[in-house]
Structure formats: structure tokens, C-alpha cells
Image (cartoon, rainbow, N blue to C red; front, side):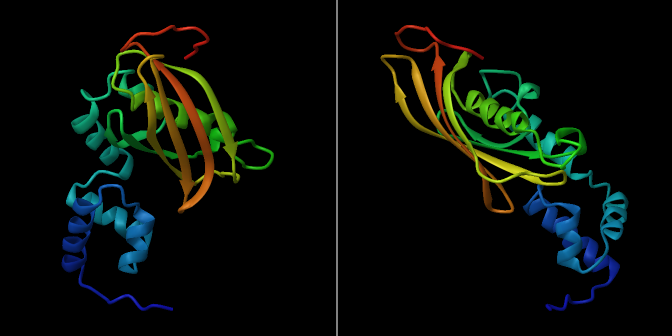
Amino acid sequence: MTRVLKRTKKERQRLLTETIQNNPFVTDEQLASQFGVSVQTIRLDRMELSIPELRERIKGVAAQNYENEVKSLPLDEVIGEIIDIELDARALSIFDVKEEHVFQRNGIARGHHLFAQANSLAVAVINDELALTVKSNVVFVKPVKAGDRVITKATVRDKNNEKNRTYIDVVSTVNNETVFKGEFEMYRTKGSGDNDEISN
């Protein structure tokens, strides 16, 4: 077992501030493990340093960086929190699974939440004011449970300008293990072509 170097409170708080500045998406649990203290100690440190909790940090980063960048839908309609996006190229979001997202009987997340995160990210990554799902092919690889953090990445694979189509690959992971995969064919208004068989 790796021993964590004992630090003074002042030194720990200095390093804590640096760590969060370098990675705003680090969790209290990860920080507690890194510094060899309890989660409660980390929370108290954050309060003393006026550092908001993770969800508020994510919202702050998203509002600051992506509010005016996403064109296809309002940012608050994306399921999960966007933490990185380059239109018509790639996007990344995180979704924290809570008790209200799972089946009471077995604690497994309802599939439509994972699909909604993936689908809304596929919409958000498109550089157009209108983007609609034509069809999707998805696979639920592993069950997701309450307390899991789902990190979803959307990558634009191809664009067909003649048919106004964009093809996007989406992969969701929990602790670096794939839990969901999807291929999305999206319609957008730019270019020429028909708009049959579309849904949102």
C-alpha cells in the first residue's frame, strides 16, 4: 500500500488549490485519496478556500467557454455537463448517475439516460442551428449504477454535404471502461438535400 506524505494544513490547501486549477473536474474523493485525508477534510478545505463543489465548477467552466459556442440547442438542454467541445469535430460531457436515474429494484441506470447523454452531445457538436437525429445504432456494453460518473465522447466521423448528413461516433465510459457505444446519423440544414425521416 502506498503511503501518502503527511503535509501541514497550509501546504495541503496550497496543493489542493493548484490541483483544482489544473483539473477543475477532479472529485473530492479523488482529492481525498491523493492527499491521504477524509472527504470531509477536503470539503472543509474547499469551504475555507472558497472553492465551489465540483458541479458548480463544471457549470462555471461550461458557461464561460461554451454558452455561445453550441448552436444547435441551448446548453441547459444537453444531458450531462459539456466539458470540452470543438464544433463539427468532437465533444466531451460528464453525467453523474444519481438515485433518481436508476431502477429501484437493482440500482442499475435506466438506459434512456445514457442514450440521452449521447444523443444530446451528438446534437451539440454539430455546427448548425438545426440538428436532428435521423437514426442511431447503439450498444449498452455494461451496466451503470448510482454514484457512477459517465464520461461521454462524441467524434464526428464523416459529413455528407449532398444529403445534409453528419455521422458521429459516441463512446461512454465509467472509470475508463466502456459502458455504451453509439453511431448517430444526424441531419443538419446546411447544404442541399432532403429532410425526410428525421426526429429530434
